[in-house]
Length: 72
Length: 250
Image (cartoon, rainbow over all chains, first blue to last red; front, side, top):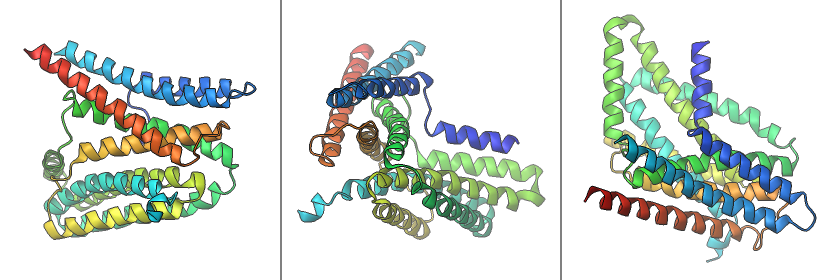
């Protein structure tokens, strides 16, 4: 049972490292999905997805770096 | 030029580079097992891991054909975003000096020490423990390779091309490992991880968008543009963080 739990945790760890970062990605995808359902908004959904992911990546790395600096 | 325009190229390159990193990590652990307990348990564990991986691929492969394409693209796209951006984020933090670089020599020393420690109390079961360690390493790193091959290939039917890229990387690392008999410490792992993170994130945006019905301008060529954007943002952010660190230390 413990081995199964450990394997599941390792598999989950492949996709989720920082919980807030993973939630942010899901939020960006959900927002793009909502916008894509609107008429004539397919390209806007694509732009939200692409630039949302880029902004999220940048913000998450800067936030993590600031946390590491504070701990020092 | 014609070969470079082949739409399977990005899938093959992403699968090759990602598999190279995973194979190097698996090789380090298998070598540690072989050093402590010999090639028999290390080899048997690795072979058993490869058999289980083969069975998983054989079971999953036909199932993929049953899933509607848009659902498959969306699911794979989101998983690729989670997986690829996680790699990219970590590689950026390593490149900026906030997380120590992954060192195969250290990983090898740690794994060897752990196995020797286990040997003290469980001499009779050590072959089993050693075999299981090798098995787990090959299975877990192999699962990542399988996921990447399916993820970058399934969206437009280039799973076989991606699998060839992955297999080539695994065979290359195995061959070098057999010859040199020590961890491949000279492989620039973080640079590779950053490159793979960029590629997988670009694929993730592309497939998620396709799954949501976005008609990307330039079709497959959009992947190269996305990869370029992710690379520029990653390098600029790393540069900014490095500069801030230097200024803070003055």
